[in-house]
Amino acid sequence: MSAEAALVFVFGAFLGSFLNVCIYRLPRKESIIWPGSKCPACAAPVPLWLNVPIISYLLLRGRCSKCNIKISPQYLVVEVLSAIFLVFVWRQYSFSITFIQYSVLILLLLTISFIDIRTKLILNVLTVPGLIIGLALSPFSTEISLLQSMLGVLVGGGFLWAIGISGEMVFKQESMGGGDVKLGAMIGAFLGPKVVIALFLAFFLALPVIAVGLGFRKLQFGSKVPFGPFISLGSLLILFLGPFLLQKYMEVMGVVGQGRIL
Image 1 (cartoon, rainbow, N blue to C red):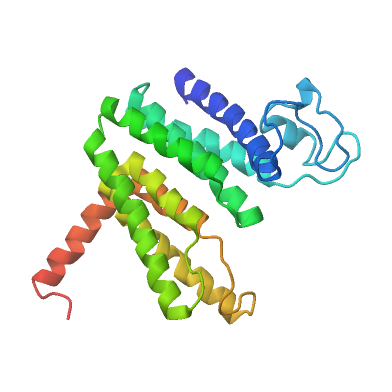
Image 2 (cartoon, rainbow, N blue to C red):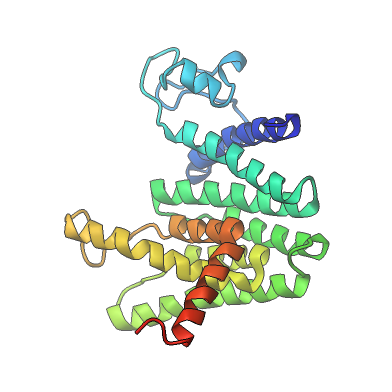
């Protein structure tokens, strides 16, 4: 790993540490600035020397230094994912507006996904500013224009809104929350019309998980399943593997078109 990549990794890990604060406090409507980091169980302040991302968690073996209670591995996972994803983006776009653009998207998706898993909520305080940032950065990006960003907002939000209305008509209950619709619109601001492919992937990824949950009776028909993580995962696949997935899709379509698959 080069010195620049290592710097991005460390920076990403510290951002991941801040994301953990947001994940814990935003649903509780607490300040993300003050007070400083503290144990979620005993509320003991975390000393600065024990607040080093990744390293501190490993040295303490995932336990509070005061009360010794086990701390959720989520803290380590978020820090590691933030660091790795930012390195991936940096390797592809170096230090550029596009690097900032996609880094912001990734950090938002991580925060939204873990909050949705814990609370089944997708917060406006994240999606609405995220949508505005995506639109604001698009004119300076090498990957998307302002027009494509605006179209992505309409496509991403409109697609999920239509799915929600259709599901409500069929199942007579809410099948797609307003938070999911705003998340789709936000992602569209960053990805443009490609957001629709990310959403198709999200449904494709969610189906086997739901099927397994129903099979093992962990879920029941009508159960609310956090969909934000699947939308985020589909978006990350498009972001990192978009050209590869498109190429494979075209190869399959080409094979089918030539009658090689019956």
